[in-house]
Image (cartoon, rainbow, N blue to C red):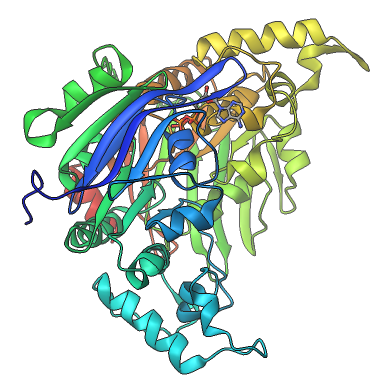
Length: 511
Ligand SMILES: Nc1ncnc2c1ncn2[C@@H]1O[C@H](COP(=O)(O)OP(=O)(O)OP(=O)(O)O)[C@@H](O)[C@H]1O
């Protein structure tokens, strides 16, 4: 490994700031990153991480301080300037064109790649493929540039994004800085391990800023960790000199206080709120039977091909099925619609919140009362003040920041938007069952604890929770029952009141 103390800073920030009105999202951030370093950027939801990344990627202009790349001060007028300076961002929501090939994605959309288009607007295919192959080779990837992106796994698509991010700097002989914005948040465990290895390899060609809420992962991958809180950079530590507990404390400003749960077996005389029997959908899942009981959290574990997300969506009437039955609170029918599910008291927090769960151009308080307008209305008459006070209560309970429910939801940070989507369902008094698809994704560990406590409290009031967790640990932490799915079929069922499955046992049933 190169000697990081003598190599020049690839990126140097000096007192960089950015405000939105009176909200100081980034304040006085100073930071140096050297060639070959992998830096972890962590911070609570709303700490200012995304805003800082948007400054570095040329999407926002900073309103104070200076940014220098390889010793030269820069002023980015847009993302193309940042790319030219060697800074490429890989976002969690992938931006690839899936109907195009790997090479087309790497080359065509970059300011440099457009050089591969001749004066008639036609591609110079040979050059396109050769340049893409070079970029892939640089990051140690053996992907075929001719493969269509739609045929690639999520991890391989991330590699294409990374190749594209470093493409411009490779051709302009600058050291690339790749910024990975929560790349592992939506990955399953094995995929995460592969991506971790790939990120490590990037050390050989440039530097990396890695944003994540998973502290264990940050400790494994990074050389240094910087912590943001309330817009400021409050700590900069080598991973060898810090523990996970210390990072949690630095981020959140308090100790972790995950409570140990007291679990009970299913009462012999209780009946399920939701009962799925032999549910089958061709190509997705086969003969799935699950019972969810009031006052219990049932977690469904499985990898991406397990069919668990499809089953969850079927319970909410968002996806059809071929055969079998779903009965909800006594109702049983083959044609369950979302409207019917809501009327029966089922709530659903989707994983794709930005597209399915929220209305960004609507104030946060209106989002909260969206599914149950009755909570802030008498008949057809809206009660804006009641709506606002309801929203304020949820803002307190879930610690949603800033405490400004009348602001547009799109102006909140990702994690805080997520809490608003949850509040929307938790606000229903008629909730019999709640399906939560990756509810903790995008939340910092402290926010995760707050949200888990609220889920628990709704559950203790008698609601049945069906949870698609991010990790096995999350399931073991909050569930009462665990169902494991593999290739569309159930491969294990546990009542944690009397079963005590080992992580490895659960993993084996998933793979
Ligand atoms: N476009 C915007 N308009 C107004 N305020 C904004 C805007 N973007 C971000 N903010 C505010 O800036 C602050 C920092 O938000 P940012 O999205 O940078 O946080 P974050 O650390 O990325 O959070 P998360 O982990 O939840 O994604 C928050 O208070 C947020 O509400």
